[in-house]
Image 1 (cartoon, rainbow over the protein chains, first blue to last red):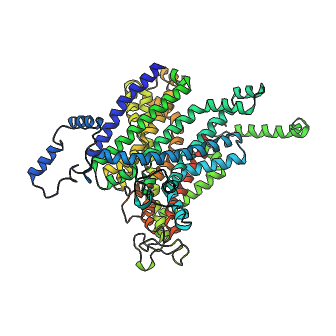
Image 2: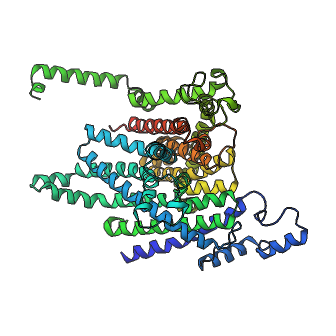
Image 3: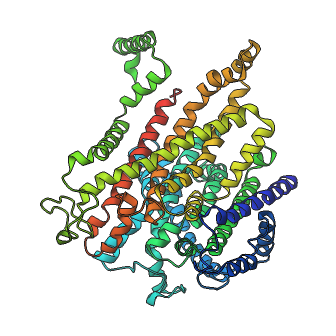
Length: 317
Length: 305
């Protein structure tokens, strides 16, 4: 057990380094000089050289990466080219909003997905199963940014029940625990919950149906065990697979929120990323992607460890 | 139930077995069987028909519509659905929606299919190499894909596109990069599983070269499963590609592309809500059909059932 945890923890180090390297190299992927956003086009040669030196762009790439990584580890992700504020401050504020939105969507999507999946698996092949499967395939096929617009048309344009933009009244980015703020959360959270709902439904349906038809369940039934206790056995066996999928889906919610956040002007990391891309604010772009990717790496680690606790076969494998 | 033991029941059994024997007598090859089963699946056929129609509409658009997709008339801005001459209304610049939706299919379908197709070739080559050669080549290739798995797909596509800048080619490049690692991983898994089977050993013992073994024995077994997997990615790619354009990272205006059209029409959401959401309906329809078709193909290729 300990050796599995240790090996898994050790493996995070090269992955995290490589992820950081990818984020760093984004600057050099960009066409043109990364400093064009800072240097005026008519600047004299000496000024260009001075700025290049000030940003450390005259040093070899490896050295640049090393110093960037060193600062990033200490929490210094640089200064936004557009606003002049430290990148980390903006990311911290946005990350809270994205976590809130992703969590709400996860609770909704996972809850409905598990319910639909179990019901479908129990009634497999029947009309209920077909309805659940149809809902699931709609969930994974629908472009969620379009679903968001549809919800806006129905609930904001026609019914005028819910707000369609922002996280709180008056265009404020500060979400709070009150009724008014909750109303702003509904549409984006419902929109984002569709993909995980569809995927969790399919996963749960397949996992539970397979276990329900396995020999040990038949044996439990044969010896007269009640359905409630059989359900417990089935749940215990299906849990590792479902947990792994849910963990991954939560990561996708965090990293994939950019489209939904753009539709609803939700002040999260996705919205920040969008701003960074269009202002060609490279430090901000690098910072947001680095933080989100590191979150995803950590989440994957957590899922693997939890899974190995739940299912001893994985530790041995 | 009890009928099955009576004379009538037996007769139906005999007919059933005779039918099976006839099937075996004119037994088809694997791919012919798959095609035969696919042709008899109504859902798959309906989806194939819808997709074929969309492709034809996109290809034949110039001959089917009298309007220019990028030229509108300021007098006809934001006409509603059912307007004479503009069945599906017009957009904010007075351009015919039906025309633009037809032309839009050109970009959207290419952006949904091509990246997966290119990634299928590159990813399979990488995966088969890693699985067949093993050792350091396997480590090098598979550990590199691990790095890409550390990013959520949407984030990776947007990060690469964001760094490269907007444009059709850049979007295609970033989408292809996103789909290579998962395809390579599936191809590697299947290759590794097949490599140690007896018939590969037998081929090697009888003097077959590495290339012959890969071409005949490995690819023959790997291409099928990897192809099914790749078809399931087309729907994801459609949504992601239109999403990039929706964010302004795909094709540039005034080109007609469903994601970009949806983004432009957001401004008209309160004026002509149903016209504004039309491009999204096209993305949804296409992605749904690809998903169902992929599911149908999967069960048609599953010969155990």
